[in-house]
Every structure is written in structure tokens, then in C-alpha cells.
Amino acid sequence: MKTTSKAKEGALIEEMVAALGDRFGQAPEVGVVLGSGWSEGAGTLLGDAEEIPLADLPHWPLPAVEGHGGSLAVGTIVGRRAAVCGGRVHAYEGRPARELVRGVRALVGWGTPSILLLNAAGSLREERLPGSLMPFSDHFNVNLPDPNAADQTPDGKPVFLDTVGLYSPGWRERLCAARPELEPGVYMGLRGPSYETPTEVVILRGHEGAAVGMSTIPEALAARAAGAEVMAISLLTNFAAGIQGSAPSHEEVMDAARAHAGVAATVLEAAIQFAP
Ligand code: HPA
Image (spheres, helix red, strand yellow):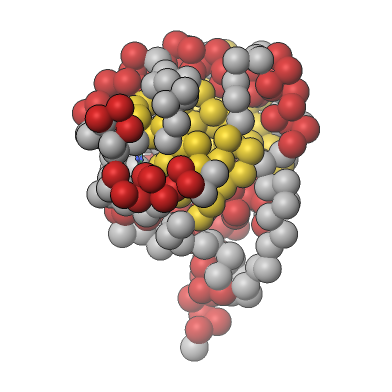
């Protein structure tokens, strides 16, 4: 019967929560999921960190994509206790939504009140240059899977989630007041892994999009449903296909992410400082 697999996801998350408590004690103030390229800068920020491979935690889906580290570190950043997860799994790896969000659900279940999601994305606007950073003002979920569907939730019930203010307005305002160069924008989420076509880019631009990427939305929807405050920030690594003649490649994305890791780390630090 369906209830068996439903109950199973909840049981997995309970085991993950127990393991986090056993290993690290009290829950942190902020949980961070690093995306492509964010790991290098973030590694330098954590003081007094305890770090373990995700493989040593039960049921944690292991990142397979280059640029996504495989560990969880708990320590202090700007005086705040933070858990930093070195990578994520993606829908384009063939993973169901419940696996994309299992780590975030475990962090929130542990008692983490604020979740910060980071990624690399393509710029849909000429004025948003590669190397700039974009806090999410909102998203448009083109075709990423929804973790709040009945067969993806911990208890097997659908969550009819209110998504107004999904990306915490207060958190974003405090961050942008301190870092006025940051311009919030709407993130367009596509499953990938093929990059969008130039025609798709024209359509996405026409629908308010400022950046395009292949992640983050499922985790944001799950974190909100679990009761957390959510913030997401894209590091714009390239112009999306057809803008300024761009033809994105994974190498370009990774090279740009590495090149801009330093500034990304300073924004990460500020985002943690201003977390609710
Ligand atoms: N498109 C989709 N995802 C991305 C891109 C892009 O141009 N750059 C980094 N992630």
C-alpha cells in the first residue's frame, strides 16, 4: 500500500535528524546549501568547524556533479552557528523531488530556523554581468519537480503551500541594505541538464526572468513547507544562451564560479549575518 513508502520518507528524515543531533548537538541558526562554485569561498569562512562526509550521515543523497562538495560542516560564521552543506543533488540526475530536498528537510527538522540556498545561474539580462550576485525576489517554476506532492512529502500528504513571500522579504532587505550592489530578481527554474535554447531565453526574459538555473526551487518549497525562513542567491556565471552571443557550457560555468568565489564568499557571510 502507498502508505508504506510515504511513512518511509518521514522515517528516513527522523533518522537523519537524530544523527545530526548525535554528531553536532544543538541545531544551528542557519543552514546553508552551497551550489556550483560556492564551496571554495565558503570553506575559508567557517571557524571552529566540525566537518563530516555526507556519506557518513544516514540517507543523505550524495552530490555527483563537479563543483558540489560532499560534506557537512558545522561551525561559526560572523558569530553565528551555521551548518554548511557542500552540495546538492539535481532533478537532472534523475532524482525524485523528495531526494532533492531530504537534506534541507533534515536541517529544518533538526531545528534550523533559516535556510540559505546558493546556486550558479545564467543571466537573462545584459545589465546583469557574469560575476554579479542576485538574491531571489521570487521564482517561476517552469518544470522542476514539486516536493509538496503527496508521493514526495514525509507523511504522504500533499501540501498546498502559500508561496507569497517565499524568499524572506525582511532577510533580503537587510542584506541589500548592507550590500546595495545586490539587485534582487526572479529566478526561472528549468530541469535541464540541456541548457535552454535562445528561443526559450527570449520567452523567459519576457516573463520577468532575471536568471535561469536548474536547482534551488524544490529545496525552497520544502523548507518553507517545513516552517523555515528561506533566502536564495544566484551567482551569475554566464549570459544565458543567445545573450551577447553566449553558448553556455559547464566548463564556462565552473571557471566563472571559481573566478568569482571571493566576492561570493563575502555575500554569503553577509547573508548569514542578516538571517532571521
Ligand atoms: N542556464 C541554466 N543553468 C545554469 C546556467 C545557464 O545559463 N548557468 C549556470 N547554471
